[in-house]
Length: 219
Image (cartoon, rainbow, N blue to C red):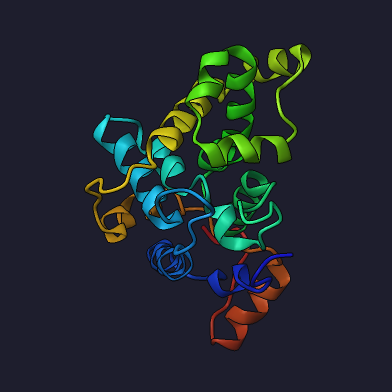
């Protein structure tokens, strides 16, 4: 279950700028867990995002690298102290509720699949995984089958998913210089451009109560 099931509602009808601030504030407040790694979840997010940015990655890829583990911030640990099994899906679905661009959401959702793919493709990759990442792999179903690998290879986000995974794997270094989360405000805001309006009728009522009138096809 989500730690705060009403969290997404607190973002409703907020501007992209305000959403970015609320999201980063939440990450700072809830990113203190280590989940058996050598850095906190917040430090890991900042390292991954900063590695992508310094490598000149596209902005949407950098955003995904920064937010790839947001699901760990949102749900209860169900891997015996190692975090959330389905954190890719949990994080992606939460970001979709906020109005995050789908390109970012897909990469967040795929980063666990990318690990499963790479482990299946290359034994050396498994050997280089951190000890906690090897343990979580068992909870996540282990290697892909050949058919699962073929399906994933046809995913239009395949190459970028592998890149996010690379930044994920590298971004676990103790003592690495990292920027403040505030330096990513503009980047997050850029991809929070879709208005969160889950119920148009409710939205219209809110406008009416605030003294506004919504005219269909006025423009």
